[in-house]
Length: 343
Image 1 (cartoon, rainbow, N blue to C red):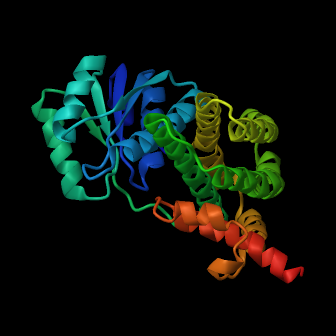
Image 2 (image 1 turned 120 degrees about the vertical axis):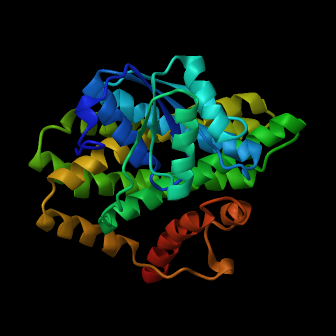
């Protein structure tokens, strides 16, 4: 794995503050900060910096996702870490204040999409008397199509889980009910795609090929495969919890299970995005990628059906105004395409 910059060896620090925003480069920031922390034998505190226009509850859930992923990558790499939660107010004031509060001696700034935004944040941290490391904003190479497909699968599943948490949290706050039909569709989505298709395909196409190229990722691959098995157990437990709720069971029990499962999924996604995919990019050959990409390409060719023909209609209708609903629709369309081709 490449280092965040050629001068990283010269940096002395013991505790990094790593602000994470919702940019596509967020995982690159996590990986770069972990590399620096490993070089310096330092620990990390992650913090989420939401967009100023973000809806508070949605931003909180999205922040929990980013932080859960970041922590899982750091722990997989043996770097001590914690999270300071969600920053309130202006990032240029909140980041230095948080760094001082948790005792950080370096602020690690990753690529933020806009050079002017990065520059102003760096200046604000320096003006507060804190050292700062600005990760170079190199244009990343276009990822393999299989990697883009895996990230889309993650985005779709995360969109479903965020919407589920939002539904249950809102119902809990208002002491109201939650839509059982939509929740049953959510479980069916999890069973149909991550469990029945995505996990087996990753293990057969990507994990096995990576094992043949290097043993360095074996421990992580073993753990992820164990987590895939636990995923099926979780689906059964969540189905039972939904049916208990449908017959008068407590909302708090269902909310607790969904929250726990969501944290489990986000941590697994983090390990895949921050450890396994970079390892695959490093060790797989061009011939390997040709085969992996072909496997994903043949599985993902589909036509999006008309609304009235969709098998996941209640779920897609509920998600219409949520972020990444388009990813969920594309994934669901694969099931429609398969059923139409076999009818």
